[in-house]
Image (cartoon, rainbow over all chains, first blue to last red; front, side):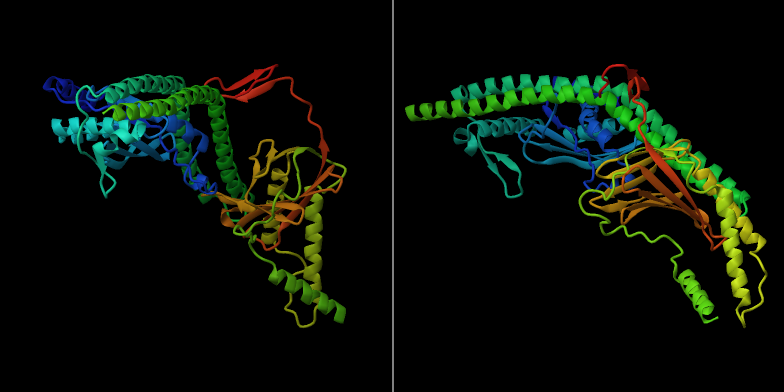
Length: 330
Length: 230
């Protein structure tokens, strides 16, 4: 952990003692940022298969950076953006070539208010990129007072409740013309529907934690292979520079039109293509090794998400019916 | 005499109007639907056909000499030497040596899918021809540009390198699919005369490997006698 991260961790460690609410954070898997136009991939140094894997495991690196500070509630990686999350983080990979990484990150709270929306760039050490984002996020959090934080937590719960039982909770908050949300009131203490929603939400959290665990497993399995890929890319970048210097020297020494000059021009291109082909082989190797892990993970997440989705429909129906019965009694 | 003048005028016109650089249209599809020909398979050199480099060079020199002599016999033409210049001869020999090196591999292994044709050659880079919705996708770097096109049922790979060096390979398959003709043409900025070499290949069935192998990053190549899958 860097010195900056340690300072942030210490700062956050003192925070709960002051009775400040800690926001739960949902990090959605990143947008891989692969252009649809295939012809752009080469110019942009985009390796689609590797991007796809990065979009799944880099959010976990961010999760680790956030949890290491101790300043946040539960931090979870989820397959889709969670709109009603207390704090939702989405990201898109802008550039990644194994050597340098640029990710566009956006953090939005349950009010729809953007905390951060910026592109972060890092060379060699991608952990540093996420640590800088976490530091910036902590900076914004420090400017939000405890009452507002509690308001965000309450609004998140109301938005979640309204998604489950719209008839009961739709008028507890208001959607503003700018797309944001404002909390209007809270249910009374001991509201029976609210108690049921808390139970449903805890069950959903258990499942979300299980899904989050799958992303942790993915990170553990992929990290070492990804490091090999990054080492190779660093070597490739060095090779390209050195080869270009060698070629310049060779070109200066040969007569135009001579066999040496022709051979030199052909060999320069040949070496460049052979290196590119070798890189393609590495990408295939990376994919061969990672694909079974991703497939296993996708299957498990699909199973769990399916279970949550099915449960969600049942919960919505049952809670709606119960609310109708209870409202009728009033 | 009139016939000879007309022939010379036609030859001059053809030479003057021939494009100096390969013209490749990379904006409109060169085919619709599937690729015109499926070249995939293993091909080995047919030494009973095709040219050897020395023979092709001798023919080229003789042809050049004949043209120069014809031109010098034309009344009113400036007096010219009876052969080609030493500089041009050296440039042609250099091109011939390069083409000999490039066309040395005895075996070509061609793989083809809906988007790409890849010609693997031993000790050299794979020629790669990519098409996206029928439009040729080139490979461009500081060292050169590679792009392909279709000329009827022939696939033409164009390579443009610094210093005015261009190399084209024209692949044409026989109607029965058993023979492949590859015409390699190299041209440099030092001479206007290109050097062309014809090679022929016969299709053969590569023996199946006893091992199934896949590439991995941490364990490199992993082989097994059974099924190995990602």
